[in-house]
Image 1 (cartoon, rainbow, N blue to C red):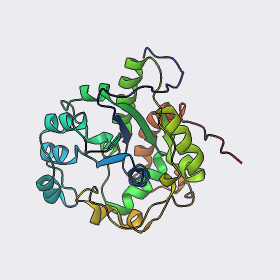
Image 2 (image 1 turned 90 degrees about the vertical axis):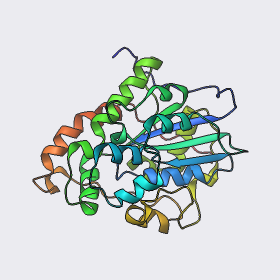
Image 3 (image 1 turned 180 degrees about the horizontal axis):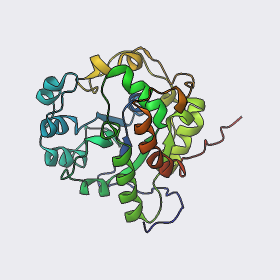
Length: 265
């Protein structure tokens, strides 16, 4: 680790005038709601887990709707990487990319991330595990992305010499306007109130896996109320070792999470 404890604020845009934002998260956070928030901006184009098909094709894992995900997506990780820094739809000045950190397998390209602004969305391991178990019976540490998220964070921070922006899903739900304003400031973006509310329903930009995972966000019209935090003692005993293994990686990033910005009276 060669970076300071300073949290970086990005500046400038790419040569084409587009701000590309890679938001790195694990599953069962508020990552899809965050995609809704950015997708509701007038200047934005969003992409949903672009490496998912490549991840499933490479691993052969038995995920819900795996065949449909592979059929609908790009399975060449190099082609995915090229698209993330390539052309965007006309009128777009903000390209928001929702990434799952566990999709970045060894050998998948990460050099493209040097050309975008990276930010990190975190959630306490206990809450992630309880939510994940409700959707899938089996779970392993590698499924949750904590280790991979910390590795990507360190890579970005070492390159920049300062920590990239980090937000905690619980903080967003407690104060959506304040935390999103702080995030936008750190990313050198204007904050738009449109990010706080959106029409219900599915989007053309949602992944093909939406029918299995996105019921709650499809019914939403904004960020929900804060969720009760799950205590370690309340976890199933089979999940406790996973929570203990994930916690140091979560806490490493949590040191840098952004405080909510004060809102005008």
